Amino acid sequence: MNIIRYQDPELATWSPLNRLASLREEMNRLLDGSLAGFTENVGLFGGWSPSVDVFQDKENVYIKAELPGMKKEEIEITFQDGILTVAGERKQESEVREGESFRSERSFGKFHRSVSMPTKVDAERIKASYKDGILTVELPKSQEAKAKQIEVSVS
Amino acid sequence: MKPVANTLERSQTSRMPAWELPPANIREEQEAYVLELEMPGVPKDGIEVTVENNELTIVGHRSDTQPQGEVVYRESRHGDYRRSFEIDTSIDTAKIVAKMEQGILRLTLPKAESLKPRKITVVD
Image (tube, rainbow over all chains, first blue to last red; front, side, top):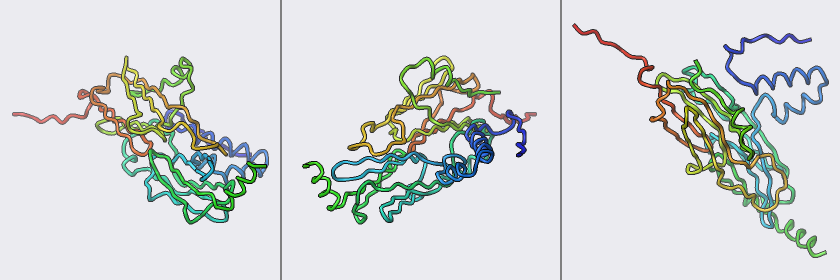
């Protein structure tokens, strides 16, 4: 049995997501451990988990991650064993600390997302750009993967 | 006192197209209220800010709604953003400043002159 401390809703910083997250954690603890482990790894609750899209055309695989309010230098992109990982930390500006906050829905902190590639890609030619808060990673498909594609479309 | 109240419930139900609701932070500074909205995918010219009958409405149009090629996996939503806030007379609506930077819209809502802290000097 866990005791949840009561907080005056008028006094506390308004943050529905944090409350949802703690509720979720409590529920997971009650039910069983496996679910809790899953959500912690994915970072869906408690941390920050930017949404990620994966597209592909004949030439490339595209990964798009919604990372509003970051600095280019703060985004870390790595590619290993067919898995692209985007990680970083979104820091709350220090000036935010001053003054009273009466709505706080944005998430801050560390994030980490990994995407496994649908086909083989050429790791040497991966390109990334960051515009309007969206990170786009372009991963050219390897010659091998492209040849396979053609084979499939013919048969 | 709530100079910037949320009116999303009302605006969400009265409008049919599925608008994305951008997460917002609001804080009070000495001279102004600062409202930040997360709208990734919206360029500077995709922002519309209107004030009508004490209702501040922010609309953000995304620049790229069409995915490149075929969708393998999608988590993001692709609708445009919209959110409304009720503002009271303590905000000088003529002096609202908007700034868009990497998907974050930052609105500075200056407090009306009458509410700002004032230093009064004593005259002989």
